[in-house]
Length: 255
Image (cartoon, rainbow, N blue to C red; front, top):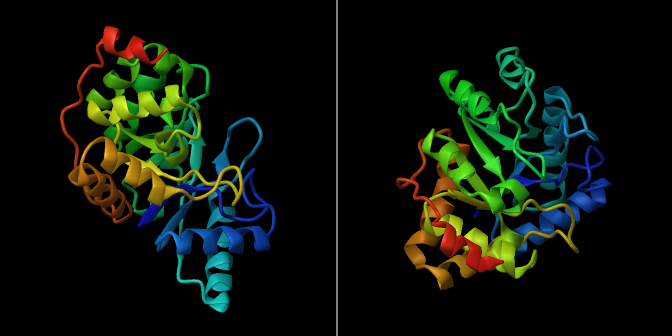
């Protein structure tokens, strides 16, 4: 399995604090069958600023340590970018990281409470410049939960989205779990990732997440989500169906 979003790099955001924390996280991931992890520290979220050069150096150092420890996992570079107005210009200036440096996909985080007014235009401008935005954990965004048409329009315009594993398993609550499954059912989600921060309250749980997807839907849906992660880190096109509107009466049933 491939995990496309985690906070495993030591000491540079609110994930692993030390190299020992990173190694413990890697061992946990390896035990679940994960072979590649995209390190995606927070960037420009109001608390953390993690520049491209710092992330690339920390990824190199952690991979060296993993080899020394005999842990069969490869760390790939990434960045969880909080949306901001100059994001496109910074990508053009080679200041931001695309996933695994393929130049094709970038992880975008919205504020937890709302969508900025400029979100649609900015995500469209990214695509004009050849980069597909992946909206991370939309199922936890309050405005999207209240009005899923907002996400539908972004997906319809070419963006992709990634659910957090613990949302899918129900660890973040039944409402978020129900909404996550609704997003998958309506072709509004394309990836599942751990968003792991540590080995205790925010651990790697991809195995449980994909099992929950298979129970709710079928094995082909599980494989599609897994294969999308593999294709994405290689910079290839991912599988996606036409997005569907979540009807209001059905959606309101989760509250």
